[in-house]
View 1 (cartoon, rainbow, N blue to C red):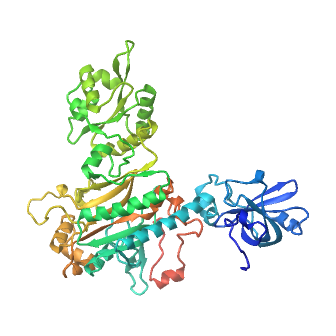
View 2: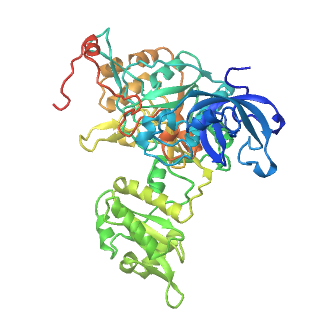
Length: 593
């Protein structure tokens, strides 16, 4: 028999009555019932109730222990009385009478409670993450993460993919975020970079003739933290395929993701037909390129109703180039209290307010439009607007005006709040959609220069070598997968034509020599029979966050950084020693200078 246990703490059942057993684990909870000491003993697998009475030779030892002491026991399994069965526990039909007791590791006073999963300051939880990981909720999340990754790996292998590992020490590449740089000891003054993604490597794997690649890849980006984004590192399901078009990638991803989410989604439904929405459509309807389709509300352009109207605020806005008036229909939102609350929300977001109309019954029981907009717009136009929006008595519409890029973010958040508060959003489902036709380029407002707006290695939908092409009208073969308001996957068909790739970078201000220098490996590879290829990368952390029904990504990462990109547990980042700096031929300077 093993020194520490014959069974785990989730294993014993009524059939084991009378067995001599060994168990080891942590003291989850202690209860004193009239002199009889009950301990809920916990290990990775579950809980078992063990007990000692005052006549037991180990009673005094048991009496000493406190929560989270690590102990081992030997004892006899006994069936519980029918009235004492705990149906909430798999082991709830038995208990173990302790005959031998051994303290394996005592514990100091706890800096945070393990029992009960009570809310606790995140900084404390991260500093004592090894204790936090014992808590039931996050422990389950980390196990869920492991099972999800196992499931993904099996699905990729079953679909004919091979898993290959790419280097961690690499060179810098423009992936849209800041690099983490590593100074080279052997080459003073030069730096490696941690890969933001295995982008170049996976393309080279395709040129190498391997056809289908995947990897659960670590990626490193020096980013500002958010609830759904780590500030330092993350893992992604990295995929690349040769001789494919967009639809081939879509079919694979839909097949894998529907099975994945159905397998781990409990009672949630999963849409198995992912709609394809263009970037422009998504921004027009939802104000974001990662829409939450559980919410059925679509925003609508109602500018025509306000051009030269008596509602001067919107009429004046529409005299300026590039402006719009958008409406957010709100079925069931037709009360002044709700409208005032949404107006206050807009003010809290930095806008002067959010206009509204709501429709109610007047004293005669007839339909009446209320609110300042309705009063100034006039009865006839207001009625046409109501008909256009498909609204009726008890409904409302909210309005935002200006340049859409300036108010879309608030409009999108307002749409989310309206959908949730009015019960329009189905909160028990996973709704996926593809977002396609992203612009390849955008103009930097400050410098006026043309820059890449997305993955620079994507295939444009037009031949860039043709004369007279406006870069701001060029769309890329780029796509994102959105689920419940989160972007969980991004990908593209790659630009495997060298002349076209040089031109793509030239438009963004990169000279040919610079591209050849920065991306020499890829440039050389594209000279030797590169196949058409494409793929994607899906965020493992966000997938687990969705399936665990968490709102914060740090709840599904074993050892995350805090909001300041610090590790309170190990104390990183740290100041290097003088010896380390000397080895790297680096000099420390005053960071305040």
